[in-house]
Amino acid sequence: MSADISPLALRQRIRSGAHTANTSGCAAGFVQCNLVILPKDWANEFLQFCQLNPKPCPLVGMASQPGQYMLPDLGEDLDVRSDISGYRIFENGELKESVTDIKDYWRDDLVSFLLGCSFSFEEPLIADGLDVRNVSQNLNVPMYRTNIDCRPAGRFSGKTVVSMRPFLAADAIRAVQICSRFPSVHGAPIHLGDPSLIGINDINQPDFGDAVTINPNELPVFWACGVTPQAVLEEAKPPFCITHEPGCMLVTDIPNSKLSIL
Image (tube, rainbow, N blue to C red):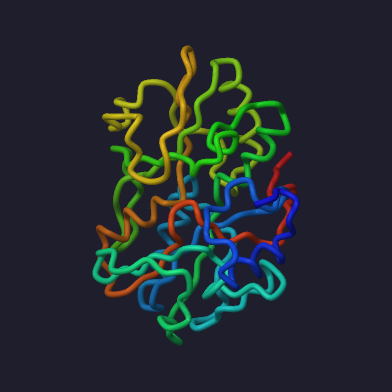
């Protein structure tokens, strides 16, 4: 999929079933979001969880009321029920099904949360001349469960999930500088170097996404990841919830530059 496609055109291709892959590198210049959909009686606690854990759960937008599925503040003709290429359906914390459309699952009590995604900061890294390995190898970014605790909120607690991109030391420093400008899409990395220090036993076996090449003298650099809520939902066990398939994001009409603090 071309980086030059507009967000609206990409959403329309996803809605029609023409694009079923991940969205890394697609619609360059625009914010991509992770998705969490919960019943309204769980929504306030999840909002508090996001507020307490802004690194893995940076809130970009949410439905203004239960049952709302068109989100005009995020994009033209944007429908959270059909404009993501992969969804996960959870019941009582267990993954029940992966689907490409959730219209048959929609209910009037559901509240949608859109969280910032690391795909948005990949663009300024690439523009600065850094090799973002999952993009250059046309793979989904590798993601790992860690031993890093999230701050609990009500029924929500659990461990942070991270995404990883390898860099030479000098490039890793530059990546920290660049990503610090984008707190709404995870901000600066939370760890670099020895993966075992954050509970990752095998860097070549990600829990989500694809393994990428790590060249000699490169450091694995880890960012808090928007898949974290999926791990937390497994612990909280709400009776019903929906998330995106890891790597399959909601591409919005919001320019990445709008989220830069510098």
